[in-house]
Length: 362
Image (tube, rainbow, N blue to C red; front, side, top):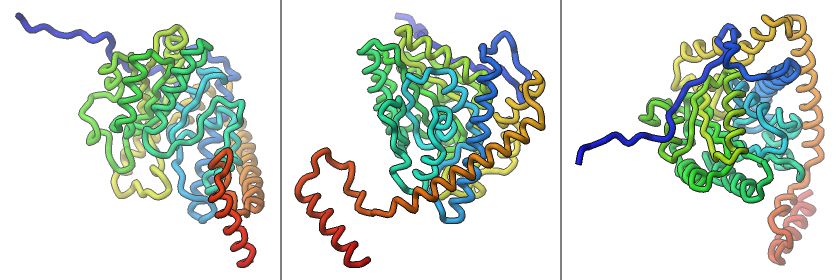
């Protein structure tokens, strides 16, 4: 029998709509009204300034280790802006921008990063899951949520974020396989920021793209310019429609760049070239969107300056409230809370002994 080529159902395309000068291909651009674009710009700028403040606070020893989203604001905000508030959001640990878009209070982000679990509390009526630190561990639960949404036929879909490093984890492949077999309405959004801590993308995978990993599972995939808000918005909008129409999952690889540290326990100067960073700074998603808005006379330098002042005040007030809240959260016995609905006797005994010890030492 002759050998013949096996043709795959899907292939990988690359999508870019806005160049680094802020010029847009109107034929490809999704319909986003000016008010929404202004809101997206503000959220991205707030995320950048909040991350910068948290970096300063961490160096001062006032909060703990965290993962800045600097450089990745565009793909996060654009992705969430393309979805409904009733859709489920499943983050990893670098989704500051996406969380702010969903209405997460900066005060709570500061509390969480200062080591207070109270800051990570999710309101009961919210369709957001909490921050997930172990790499790729959020992906199977995201698929489970999507399975439940599909089972209930309630028109909800799920988006989950992860980095390039997560595509090397078993949880990623298990989640992709389950999502494909059961056609769950989930969007896998990979933020390929080129570095898994100190491991460069080229040494992590031999695949030409990360998006093509989805093809092995029969899942449609797209690679986009992750610093182009229009491209990310369009890609997520398309994937969301597919999911709602019963077409199952999609994987989107947003090609972006981590312009800051992996976490505050990291020194990227030890493993990457500063020239590379400067090249990506020219593709800054915030500056590109500002150029677009200014060209359309929807934003001026004076308005940017005013917005910067407003955001600086907002971040100042958030830290003041967070600091006050931390002064109130001075009862260490809360470590026994939220473990059991009905605490066992041995745990209650431990709590009592612990509280007695605190009193004797106080």
